Length: 490
Image 1 (spheres, rainbow, N blue to C red):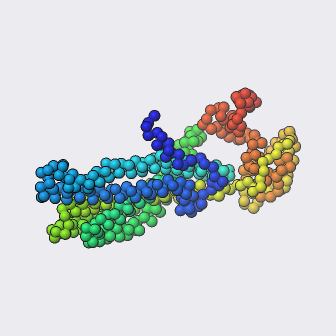
Image 2 (image 1 turned 90 degrees about the vertical axis):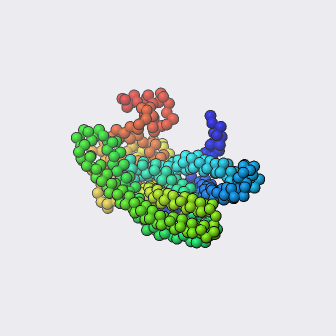
Image 3 (image 1 turned 180 degrees about the vertical axis):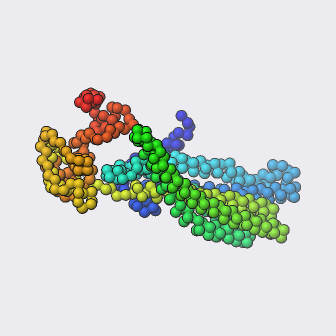
């Protein structure tokens, strides 16, 4: 057990990822979608915002300290304080050195520890898991058709990646982009305090950066979204093939499966090339502008020093601050790339997760009241939304205990009728009654809990045999599980 465990637990308790909600359906617009989840952890992200500000101010202060230290040492050498050693420095500049030491040795460490705890103990485990859980809760409530019309691997990937992509996007925005924005503003203020012309060069630098960003950011965002979608499709196809590997092997379909995967991989490859071209363009443009601005600030600083308007320490401070700003702006563009890559993934996830539920319980739906198991189908119509075909004006009366067989060619609607009895789809006309209750007016879970369905294909979860047998009755005893297995001749 670590001495820091109580501190970790304190921060980890900020977000309860499994806290129930009335509604799990997020908005289908990106900003509203992000805020739907971020708003549930707003204090954690506000703490991250504060960290970005404090970290930027301290970072800029370090270079101020470098300049101050150079000036103190230069003055000590010319005034004879150097000969007095540490006692002379302490007597003449003790408070300045003490403040700088306190910020570097203690203040900076505290701020960085605070930021690490917010990111690693609050955002990553709490927010990521909360978003994944709530996305899963909404997706798992979707209709059967939702899952039949997409690849299971792709759905799972989007649900899992959505939490990380949105969290990474917010961390990049508040911890990195915000940090660099504050640092740039601090640099502008400090250099302007030396000479307004130095501040003017920084302003030109920032304007050039904004122009470059305005040109490339939309491109990066667009191609980031396309790359994320292509990657999701590729993953879905690969998982689909691996999940059905027996079918692939039995039919000798390795070649056709390879072509199917290659087609998706080529699409992802082409999308990725366009995305990386935009990244290269922005890096080249930014590097050219930054080189020119560093040279201008260096030349102007030396010119001011020659004119006696700034000290040697100020030159060192200005150049160090400028070089650091150059590194941070380069890092900013890289993080903007990551930010929009994450935004593309988040938007791609949103388009799946934020879909309204396709099959809802009626507002006044009640649990099914079982009495004897009498099923009535009255003038049933169902055409899969095509206007005709499949089932038209079908009526059945299945009495309690009665066994019936449905016979017909493939596509006649036998499986469709079973799916309608279970309300996997809403009927387009007529009624289905269970013990006199319209199944459209009872809850879906209570209806399906009264049916036992042997499907055409074998479906096993990657869990124990007992868990598979008892899936419909999680509280079943060992004896009940064994009895069920014997009845099924398992």
